[in-house]
Image (cartoon, rainbow, N blue to C red; front, side, top):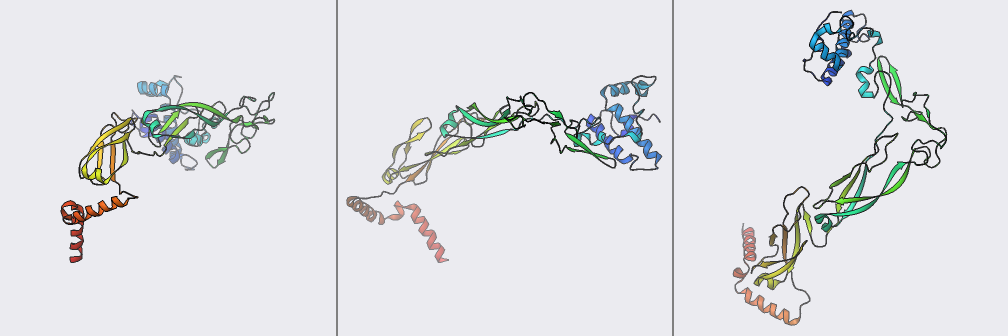
Length: 374
């Protein structure tokens, strides 16, 4: 075989990454494989060149030697040839598809060790707890290792046996032409083991359902749908795999007074007609107690007063939000005869110059007249 530069054979730069080397080799192997090019010696030669280049450059030690000494690094029994002893007829497409189907040269199959599933816990807290932070305990159902069989699934005194269908790999290989595909073993369902005498407590699963109590620290400033991760508190792993995580998802209960908008709070404050007209001072609630604000005379319903820094400091914020107080002028109900009499007298006086005392009503009436006049 001619001694061409391995990098030129694969069509890559000398600083190519391992992934780039693998991709280049896959492309050439698919194109020049003898099964796809019968009776084509040139294609077989190109395939062998690509295979030799890949086996050298994909090995860190061989690649370093080749970069320094070239082909001379492997002459005279140096580090061993690239593709000697492995002809095209012995090529296994698991070199190309191994990382896709979980296989690889040697038929090891996929690992039977699996990480435990993540769990989700929905937690309801009050607005006050969200603003100030809190610590509470939760009781979580989970799958834990069976203490009777120590997770093996087999009855005490017995042990699981290796699955004869897949040889304990959990995967079976299906060959179709030059494609080699691995699938989950239908007999052991991917575990690689057969439990002849299952444990009575876990029915051969190796895990049982339990409840555990955990302490959860809620940081100040959390908002709806924020998640708190408790590492390793999810379901127990399979066959010695690591446990999953537990995610506590926050849901804030509706509040009787405040509505939250990110770090700001909003509330409605009803005031009397006379207070809105004459002005005065009112008390409004905050999360830190009571605050007082001055209502100027002639305040209209819907007017918003902002109290800076009386909102919530979010988890990722550097300052508190604001409290927005929406003033609502309340119409009196259950009036006495005397109150009705005074209101009628006020309306009579007010009617003499309604434009001066009711500018919004006059403006609206003017717009109505203009509308019907057009």
